[in-house]
Image 1: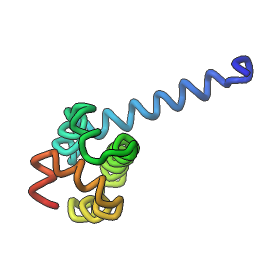
Image 2: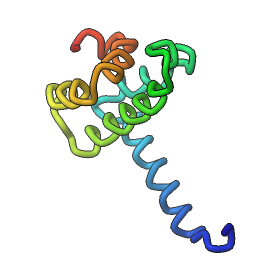
Image 3: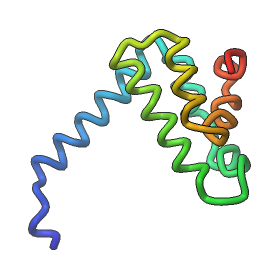
Length: 102
């Protein structure tokens, strides 16, 4: 029911997401993050014929945000991108700064 929604919790969640995005935009992996955000839906959807691309793209964005928050080393980020699987790696390779490392 719409009346059961805790608007304060929803707004707090939205603020936290905005804070993570801002940190990633300005953090040590900002080049990767900005490159991923510049990808068009057509570029992402062109990776595989099914619908997993957008989900993997969002997981990749979340991973870069988390790597920024956790102050991971670049090698740790690359290892985690590879652990997400082939689709995530193929999306990451669309970003030249990522592609050079994968």
